Amino acid sequence: MKIKNPKLTKTRQDKIISLVSRYWKRLLLAALCMIVVACANGAMALLVKPVMDDIFIRRNREMLVLIPGVAVLVFFLKGAGSYGSEYLMNYIGEKVIRFFRDSLYEKIIDLPIAFIHKEKTGALMSRITNDVNIVKGMVSTAVINVFRDFFSVLAFLFVIFYRDWKLALGAFIVLPLAFYPIVLFGRRVRKFSTGTQETMADLNSFLHETFTGSKIIKIFNLEVFEKKRFKKKTKELFRLEMKKVIAKALSSPVMEFLGGLGIAFIIWFGGLRVINGTSTPGTFFSFLTAVMMLYDPVKKLSKLNNTLQEGVASATRIFDVLEEESFIVEKKSPEILKGNFFEVEFDHVGFSYNENEEPALNDINLKVAPGEVLALVGMSGGGKTSLVNLVPRLYDATCGNVLIAGKNVKDISIKSLRDHISIVTQEPILFNESVKDNIRYGKMNATDLEIEKAARAAYAYDFIKGFPKGFDTVIGELGSRLSGGEKQRICIARALIKDAPVLILDEATSALDSQAERVVQKALGNLMKGRTSFVIAHRLSTIDYASRIILLKNGSIKEQGTHEELMAEKGEYFKLQAMQAAKGLNN
Image (tube, rainbow, N blue to C red):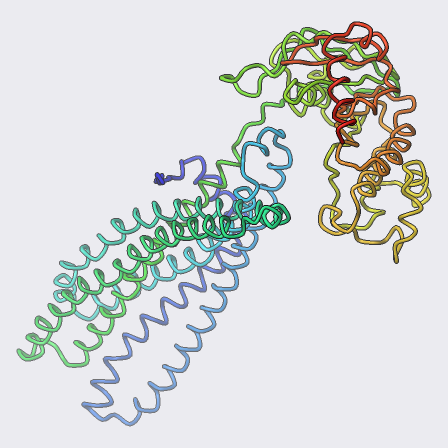
């Protein structure tokens, strides 16, 4: 796996800074708390001199009472400052994480369906969960420690130069070397963090697929195969995690060693000054304490830098989604679609999913009259679903125009366009909510009476009332507690309550058995009344009611007419009918 080394552009850095700076009052208060902690740390080093010189050497009883009291005050202030800064920065971090989660979800929901299909579901979920959590660590934990350690360094530097400026200059010969591992190992951590996050996203996607498809895995006895695939992915994740661990683990010992060189020099040079009488033991130990406490925040900066680098990698992945541009663009002043009876027209329409692929549709010219039921038939891959997806602008035509009520769909407000279109798909899409809420999804302000009326028209009322809680029954994830026919009838009730003038039925009965299909067909009959309907049909026996039938092959219209007209032509439609009839006899 090739691992990228991401960098946050200045624009993205400015966005994060702008986001955090919204909470400048809390930031300022947190900074004051950190300064209190830093001053307390410096005071602890300063207290070493009077403890050594006044208590242990001069044996001053007054100082024996005073200094412990001062020490208690110092530790209290340090504790209060630590709590304040921790709370305030975590508050900001949680606000930032909520903003990114909300923004990511809104962006993904708003992006075209093509983006959702292109990306793995698990990878998108990983952006909202895993990546955002890591950014929180960068904003709250890392930032608070960076500032606290920075102020502590300043406090210790003051103590060091205040106690013995000559010795302080000697200590700074080694100190710059201690910063080298921060840069060296930080780059490696950021690199491997990106690889880890990408692998984790892939793992999430794998889990989503295998858990969703668990029935297929069991029926085909592929549990062992899937276990091997999972172990292969966790092995790659383990490899990247260990590389990151090595980079993190090495940085601290290297800094410890370089810091040790500085301490050794101070002991030698400072001890020499005490022996020569140019310094007191208290001054030396106060100085040594400050230096040792100084090296600790410098050492921590390495670990904090690792956290920052992980945050940079995650922020890069988040911004990659947030800055994704939608190719379904709405005009600045779009038209509002009004009315309840629409003609739909395809004017020399061509469409390709990608530039390098064969066109899915070629020069489609078609008019669908208001209230007409148009059946779309043909072999798989002929372009049926591609054609109907252009009407609600799930995709945009590559060339030509799609018109509704004489208006180009690209000139119409996307919301008003989709307000006038309903869809029932082959795979019923339901949510883990109550039956009532799933039907109300078609009209959010629907009354209970309207919901009941839609359920009756969809032939769903009787089985719904048979549930223990009736319309308040929660149906499970993707409607797992319902049969295929029951799920489809709830979807039809949802489409009915929306009462849109244009209807798309994408193989709405192909997954049902013959008994369930008969009931659903009756419900669909109620749904199509007075609507301009596009019916994609797999079983040709289900489209007898169609006003007109279009046969698509390789993205082009090959035949069109009524059932009787197409059968009389004895062309492609006739062959399809013969194939299905033969299949039915064999079954």
